[in-house]
Amino acid sequence: MDLPTVDLPALPRLLAAPAPGWVETTDVIVVGSGVAGLTAALHLREAGLHVTVVTKVNIDEGSTRWAQGGIAAVLDPADTPAAHAYDTEVAGVGLCDPAAVRVLVEEGPTRLRELMRIGAEFDRNPDGSLMLTREGGHRADRIVHAGGDATGAEVQRALHAAVRRDPWIRLVEHALVLDLLRAPGDGPDGLGRACGITLHVLGEGSEDGVGAILGRAVVLATGGMGQIFAATTNPAVSTGDGVALALRAGAAVTDLEFVQFHPTALIVPAGEPGAGLAQQPLVSEALRGEGAHLVDGDGKRFMVGQHEMAELAPRDVVAKGIHRVLLATGADHVWLDARHLGGDFLARRFPTIVASCLAIGVNPAADLIPVAPAAHYASGGVRTDLRGHTSIPGLYACGEVACTGVHGANRLASNSLLEGLVFSRRIAEDIAAGLPEQAKPAEVGAWVGGQGWLVPAGATHTLQRAMTRGAGVLRSAPTLAGTAATLTELGQARGVPRTADWEATNLLTVASTLVAAAYARRETRGCHWREDFPTADERWRGHLVAGIGIEGLLTERWEEQQ
Image 1 (cartoon, rainbow, N blue to C red):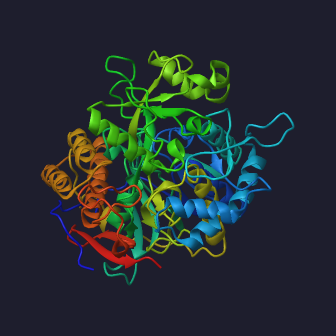
Image 2 (image 1 turned 120 degrees about the vertical axis):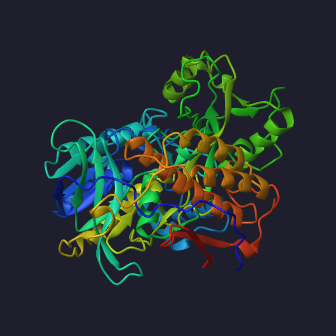
């Protein structure tokens, strides 16, 4: 297939950075400390391997702790893995990998029970059975939750405690991963398997500054890339570092155009605490699962008649429904009506949401909740197989940074934490089955430092505004071309080696790759909505696989859906 292309900036194959001033060696390096990274680390330790976990800020400051809704798994005897698979594939609009979905739904219940054995405590009914609920796109009650709407925080707590108990898991906090180290090999660039990373560690002592960690395998679990948009539910650390690192290293990335916008982020009015922050508070669709309704400014339930499941339709359908209202009315938000659920129930079932609302002067028991879509989850990422292998030997990926094929064009609600649990275990098993000896990094690139380049931190806000305006929920050839022109202009400036500039360069890398894919895909499918191509087209039932060439130019190839 001849792919439509748009001019985009050349991208760095390396980040400019000083040569490493210190070196450590371990068996396996895990980059990221959310559900995928910590679960992988714990299973690797069960296999007797030494593990170093590198995390960008503190161990608890990634995306996992913000997950409100829960974890989807078949635990009700009346439910089946086949039914869970069906709902997942319907949400994925023809682009899910059936084999990956089968792995997810069949292994998921066991992985969830392992998490409970580690110490995670989920909400239960008076008889002691797990309390199950339903979210958008699910046709059965199969969502377990904790603390009402604080599931992610409980999962993070349990995994964090387990990691802290193991003295052979080395934790490096306040560390930004920079580039992948590769051994000499027979690849097109003369490089072979992954054998370490370079990173920058903030803080006191000898670890301050750029260093290197050598390992026999590297696991990317760096989370998402929501910060390429001006409004996102992702934390500030979600700057696409893992996807950008993989692209620079030569790995294949796929389905990046499919970014899920959560339909109901809490809109913080101007002048209130929290207005203008990079991370928007989330109003979980579990609230709609319990009976809350979306209404417009006239109090009309606008999702009724648009989809058989109304407010519980898949997220892309609900986000599009809200955007149609916003376009028609000129408003910047719609309303969520939960008043009929009662104050006592809301406070007990959704304490986090209630607290966020009260902080901006909204009482969900008496007031309508102002909501609008915000960037939430990347269905695409670094391409992997069913064992987490990327296209670079020795480099694995799991969690939101990865594209396992589970989510297709649109992630089904509460499948994300489950995916992290399932595929991190598979990665650990694969690594434990046979690790090679530690390889010496090739004496090129990031190992010697100073050969890359950066864009300045000042590019970030302009990039985010351009992405939201032209490559957000609504896209077309003109808006995407305008965004590409902005990115190209931003790519001309040069920054200096520091955290903000490294992050800005990662954002430019990921944003450019997304825009290229969104421009090429001339259809509307799942999370990807083209106003100029408003329907799904069977000719586009496949995947755009991206990379960065030797000269720093983006490459794309087309693969038919199998």
